[in-house]
Image 1 (cartoon, rainbow, N blue to C red):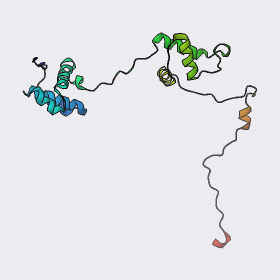
Image 2 (image 1 turned 90 degrees about the horizontal axis):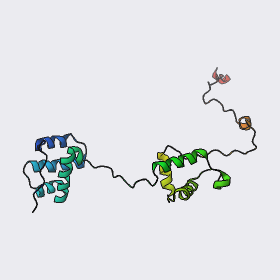
Image 3 (image 1 turned 30 degrees about the horizontal axis):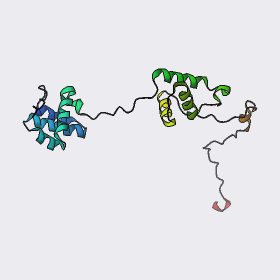
Image 4 (image 1 turned 180 degrees about the horizontal axis):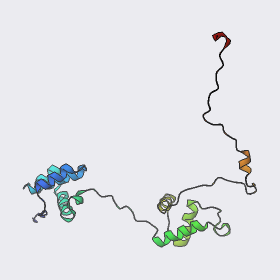
Amino acid sequence: MARAIALRDDFDAAALRQMAKNSKNGPQIRRLLSLAAIYDGATRTEAAKIGGVGRQIIRDWVLRFNARGADGLLDGKAPGRPSKLNAAQRQAVAGMIERGPIPAIHGVVRWRLIDLAQWIFEEFRITIAKQTLSRELRAMGYRKLSARPRHHAQPAGAIEDFKKASFRAWMPSHARSRSPAAK
């Protein structure tokens, strides 16, 4: 049987219990208390029972604690799938969005996500879903905006002529006249 991995020498059980007391992260507290039990002389099996895990997990916690201290016992965010577009491709997409589509070449008068996804496939041979492309564009600082439609022959200022003037929301009340019966 292999020898157990030793814990760091710069901590002891009391220090780990104090860190657990000061922590607000439940899983980290459980891990710190399990490792404090090992510092007190408990076996790895007993520490696993305290933590509610198996011995292999205790070994992983020891390795993380030895490498990064108490911060190594915090749950990290999973990195997720890497982006389909690299920096140069993102820059090309941004340039295409800024220039806008050319109807004779691209066949559209405004970019939609599906049109951009088709252009990305034709340009880079990368298949990308609309939702993924939307997330990428949002990360690049673009927002989904749609302009209010306007007729091409509409004269400038025509809308201003037809806007209604709204009344003030608050107006002083008029002085009430006394009724003749109240006199």
